[in-house]
Image 1 (cartoon, helix red, strand yellow):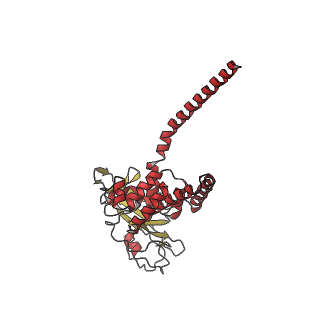
Image 2 (cartoon, one colour):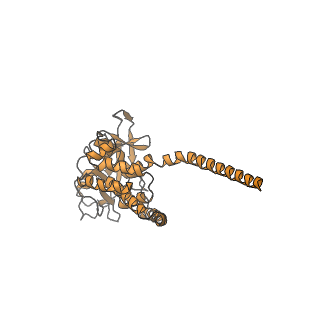
Image 3 (cartoon, one colour):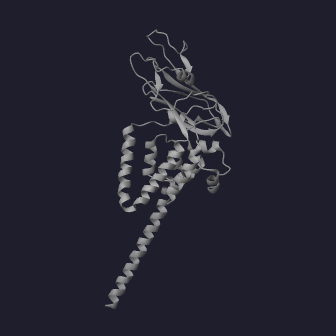
Length: 313
């Protein structure tokens, strides 16, 4: 009997050792995968989020909790909080280039080998709109020229003009666009990011909500507070910018238009950028043109003191 008991004990120990080795190997193998979906992916998602639905999706799939906290402090936090995370001497341009969608006199976007790069500096790039000849010979309020600077064209639009190919989107921030030197073209929002149908984002948000609702039964109020804090961190970062949008109009009397971006050869900082031209595809026209501008409010500092502890609780 003692011999049988000894064999069983040895077998259990061997099984425990095998299970321990398996769990250790699994953790070691999954480590790089978890790191891959950590800080870089979180920063990229936050830097491309512009709507409350985007923030909700991020809250339902928190892949970088600490990154979200630090990012919110970097963008909106008080100087004491920035010092706490070691970012007290960080410039605003670096934060904007890394975490925001906006462009400014310090931050710009340039075409770089088929992609789009956000860098510090003032770019040389033209954002144009081409209006092809129309059979309708009625006078235009824009002028006789068929190629315009896009910002001048959009600033002169009138809501009562049925022939205008663009109109301001509902709920869009309203202000004069101003010179491109102070607010360079947003290439990533208009060219780099292919906007999918709203139903895709709603489906992802609902799926994430259902999954988190299942966890909610086990995790209780903690998950709710954490998700709320993550939503607040993402919203604080996203709401430091305001977007002005124009939607393309369609109709028999609407004049056709084509957007063009021209970039000469230039050196920005320590990087060289090749000349590049991007023409809007006639068969796949851009439906919404977006311009993002920094609009940091002092209230966000107070909100950061509430959002960060909510995630840490």
